[in-house]
Length: 230
Image (cartoon, rainbow, N blue to C red; front, side, top):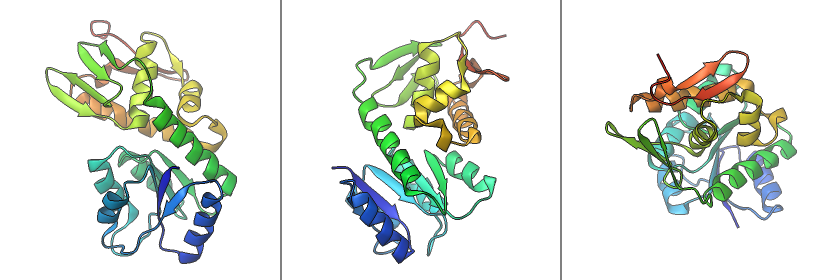
């Protein structure tokens, strides 16, 4: 049974979501002290976190930043705030997806199922290591290492890198990446993929590798080998 942590201060909405998710055999936990969200997260050790932006004490961005600095657990924002900058901010902080309230429960459950399947089934991949541009990619540890150091990627970032590197020097369409990441592109904003790729590039820049992920306007993205970029 998967454990889900629902960080939501609206008691009525929390109970409604908890009841619906429990009917799908998920074990749902809430927060008892909104000044101690990270401590409760650490104690619960959930398999997935659902978090609102507007919370008592500190907002969801604060707690997302703290959780992501210590864990790669999948994070899904669930918020009534509808400004595009809120979604962009959540993705930049390491969230995996964003749903705007009000929402249809079928969309929520579809996203949760896809995220859990993607994260926990993906960990059984038999290919653990791959070399690209003189860097070693560890698919099990979600790390990339070269002579400049080691970076740690989120699952989304690693899945994007895996898809691109496994078909290096070949353009992978945005639609194909979205389907790999979220399974049903009907529920995904195109901007979500852009933010994830930009976040991946920013991390790869720490190792001097960001420029080897090329954008092909109107087509998609391509990973190239060192020496093939001017």
